[in-house]
Image (cartoon, rainbow, N blue to C red; front, side, top):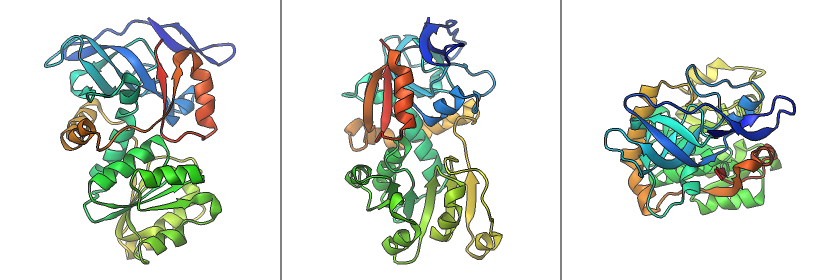
Amino acid sequence: MRAIMQDSESNRLIVGEAAEPDPAYGELLIEVKATALNRADLLQKRGLYPPPPGASPILGLEMAGTVLEGSGSWQPGDRVMALLPGGGYAERVRIPAGMAMPIPQGLSYAQAAGIPEVFLTAYLNLFRLGGLQAGQSVLVHAGASGVGTAAIQLAKSAGCYVIATAGSAEKLDACLKLGADGAIDYKEGPFLPKVLDYTAGRGVDVIMDFVGASYWEQNLSALALDGKLILIGLLGGAKAKELNLSQLIARRLQLIGTSLRTLSPDRKEALTAEFAERFMPHLMSGAIFPVIDSEWDWNQAEEAHAYMESNRNTGKIILTVS
């Protein structure tokens, strides 16, 4: 089958040939129609984020397509979308039947490909790990990213107060249109004073952070009593200069590090089922939806990666299989 491969000489992404997936009992064989870019793809391409043991070395953490070989209740021809440990940049992929979710009626394959990774990441961090409840508040860093746009929508649909950070007027406006109650331009200075202004000095109950070290002190100070900092990325560095443990004790704060990709298949299936039960009706009705920045033919994968590296996107960048 065809798949996006890394050229050994130029290191550029090109369409090449890869081995056909061989589905095991209880798995589906899917014809991939579209996949989506994630920052993990950029790291894996540079050798900094290897796939889990047994996973496909091909890039791609999510996909939307058509069932070729069914299992359980899934039949050939069904339109499905799913989270992947790898392999999305290919014509075909195999997945456990429990990982598949139906594509909401009215959504294209390209739109559906922008759902699994970001919505499951947001759900895991906000609700499963963050314990976010109606009436609580959350700070979503990188609010205009794929995960950020999903997190804003999920938190608002759950009855929460949402503050988002972003780096341009256009991205701030996008966050507000998705339902954020407040939006902060991190390029204009520290975000902490504005978070405290939005919350009348109380701080937020949950922070979802992609940045890491450079936000460490502000994040801790922006948390309310019993607040939780969910760390899902290290774009701002991995080593904080100082770690004041007294803040964690005095205000009963929790620091939680997480990675969706490294969860076991069983845990991913359980997470998928839990998310689908709670939020699939919202996706089906259009109350929440994937925010798509742009669609690229998979022959333009290298250019699409460069576009993501430039940090210009609001929402998901999609690759369609031609």
